[in-house]
Length: 295
Image (cartoon, rainbow, N blue to C red; front, side):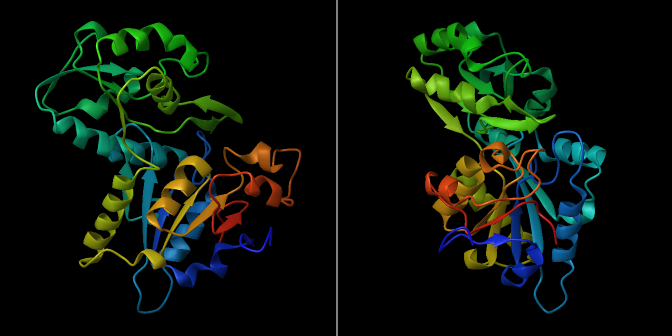
């Protein structure tokens, strides 16, 4: 154990029987932005196929700013097996629902063109920033070279007109090619800092958990699973762990994700050491820590 309350798991199998539903993060748990983490997919398959009378489900819960079919296509390309999960819920799906609550609006897309599918089939008009009634922020135009600071003037112009924003990806950073890449959450935070009105779609906010549990119930043809028999697995304290804790869902932190360097599990450190001090400085704690999701 790291301390009296946070055990380190070496294998998910040791706790799998406790749960009927896994709400599993995607980036950082199932892949690194380029390749699948094969043992993680295998662990989810083993969980779904546990023998006995209980039905086990896995819902992938992602802060990706695109509808779930696009995420599934990406996962297919990385080599994540479809047998590892029952359904996918994305912040893009939730963003579409929020946009649909304001039919006919003039919307400005703040983000890269690759995220454009988030608007397909919706009643809206995409417009330049100066004509916008609402902003939908999906990310930075060039997340390799830009920072939120590059958007200072753009955000100030929106704030002057009191244009509300939907943040379609609350993540601050993700890991890609062993680097931390900025996400839409950083821009949304900068907008809030100057008084901008922001609604966030995705983790750690309550609607994503309500929707995921409802989906799980529908998959099983009955009520939502018990929260006590649900576990959230993710690599981010701020989103995956904090969101689950606020909803009352047990959680497992995957150490080899965006907090890897803080936890001392970089490429130069091949084993997970004592992380009690790091955990003690976090606003919330997971119920357990696992180095990687493995069976």
